[in-house]
Length: 210
Picture 1: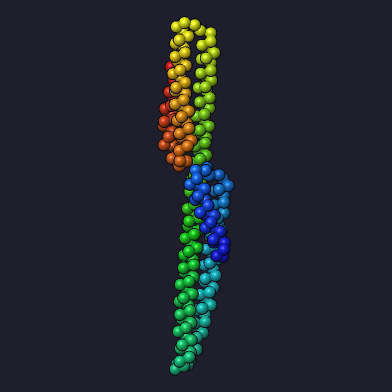
Picture 2: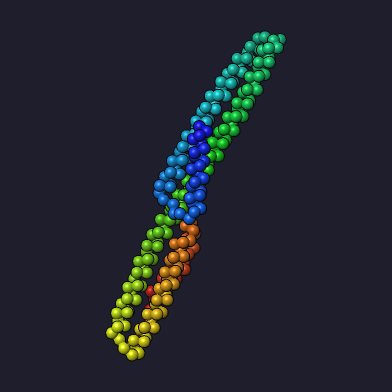
């Protein structure tokens, strides 16, 4: 039991280090965390069952010695054995309570970690879907710039200068749009929506006529 718990703690710490490294959470990470919760719950249940059995055995022994002491009212040995059994029962109960409390704390930590990873995965999936959409819009801006360059090759004079200036303006807007997307992608996955208004504004600017 002690060895398994140690492994669980190491896995939990590894998950924290992994998350702090800036790596994206995967479905496998969430599944592993949920499996760890189940394992910790099983260990808690086992500790409770084993502890209950241990205390019951101590209480049964104490009951038998109490009955003996009552029959032998003036028997010092019987009374001494009863006091020893009472002490053992109390100590066993304390040990069991501490062990169960420890297992419950580890289970709670595992639950919190699983919930955190699940929330991060959900946020990541939403962010990735959004980034895919805005990258599609960015591709449309690139195609627009390319079409304008094709038209530019066929123009001369004032019209050439005007379209050339429009292209430069659109290129600047396009870069601002790309930068906004990059900033959103590199934001903390749980805070990416805070960058969304800037991306939306940059997208609107890039889509507007110049």
